[in-house]
Length: 439
Image (cartoon, rainbow, N blue to C red; front, side, top):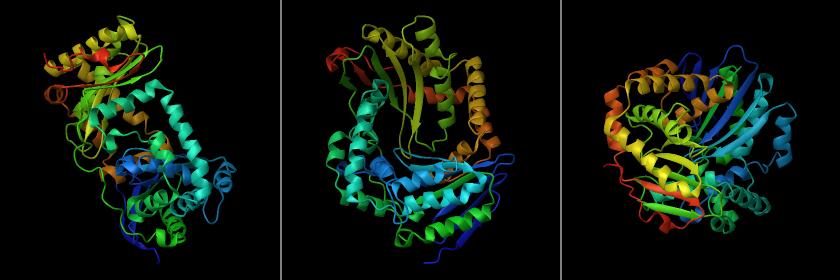
């Protein structure tokens, strides 16, 4: 099949352009004046929530395997080709998408397009590579489990979202990886990695038409993979099944690691900006309520923060704290106290003003390099379906009122809550804990 342009949207925002090919592949670029580099990402609309129970961890396993070789490049040639010109090559897997990305000098962008397109569309997935990489993935799981500050978030997700795809670890489990056959991974790859499910995002010193020509040439060489039908529907669509009120992983750790939280908002919920500002004031930064009450005034924890996560049809909001095991009840009591206060009264005017300033600054400062600009392009196209101008994003935060925050706080933080914990104790330690936030 000859790939061709079927749709072109010129300027979406400033110097952003978008092109759609006949295969369904989408290409977005953003010219950044004054830089001598470029960042490219291939974003694939597949993640751990697309996995059935026997496939648990397949998306992340594939992320590793796509670096192992194609018909035209060995694993060494894939990495050496970009390192030889000073470039970086990496990837990551989330619940809802996978991204393969590179940073290179502007003159080496055609090489990066060719290497990434080759490995994402033409991976061999040999039995030998599957067996060799199995050990690497198992070591990554072990490394993750050895960090209780990371592991507690998986425990919390299971407590909140149950055993469904969003509640399971992105990495999979030791059992699922050990039992993963080559044919299952290859079939998952062939059905999920399709052109209509893929977005190519490029930012930096570039010419849009040249990028499109390079992508067309690279993907045309992929043959029948590039012509595949759209990927099947997500197996994890719909509200996640409920989890348990408390989930505990017993570990011989010096600290107790705690995440207390509840269901949040879906990714496109119009209240998400108000919830983001609420989380910022509650526990993001040294001036936040939780940092001041738990660390500054009482010295009960080194690390304490709040967070929000959003998916297509679900979300979560929570508070993390690491403390001495004997301080667990006291720290959780203070977390519940601050959540109860916010749920009842929202934020003060000063807190809302400070949260808006903090959010505006973080948004702008995080978009000051080609890699972050590329990430914005790819994620916006793949999961939001829109690319609002930066000024519009800033205005959305500015338009949030104290009443908006108060309403979302009462709705989201009204409980009941769930608790994920990692530490030197069993589940009975929390039998007496009151997880209802409302008084």
